[in-house]
Image (cartoon, rainbow, N blue to C red; front, side, top):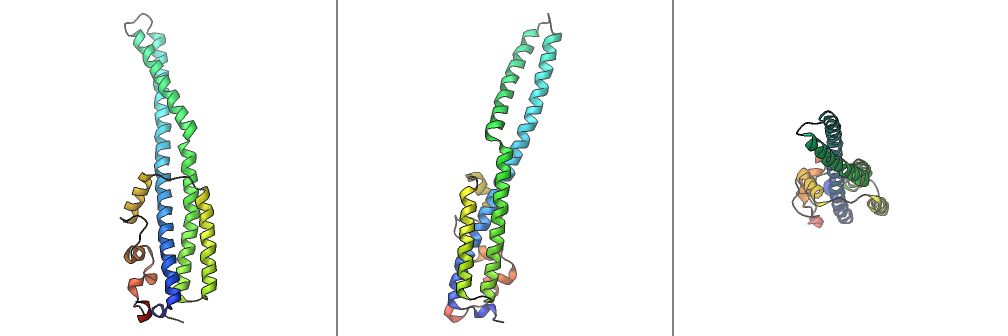
Length: 203
């Protein structure tokens, strides 16, 4: 079997491209995961806020009934009206934006991207081991690129906060530029370039 240190220049060039694709894919996967986590948390907070508001509205209505003639009768009514308006606004927000459903879409996108990411990882392993010829490897690369395009085309948008959270999670500080060491950290030790010497033709 061909040793990793004996990888041909053409395979090395293809590996370099696939490593970059793997890094971008891993980054996007983590961004969608962080987006889903934040939206899920927002959805849970919205549901609890709605429960609290509903309880307060009920309490205010009961207080207004039993406060006939009391000095604070009017305040109970006003408070109930204000709480009802807040509840209406919250319910409109939850209905229109539906953070729970949006979080699920991000989870599905992350799951699809994870599958492609793992396929890139397998492709890197085959390139390093040179178990397939170059045309077959390029065909697999093109197929993965087409699959990833379809996922990106239908995936929901992420935002800057999710992007920043993904940076922190992956210990990554440069936008869409991966050093050898950064990608090596995300790869199994057997596939890391720092663990194998280079041929003179690769330098």
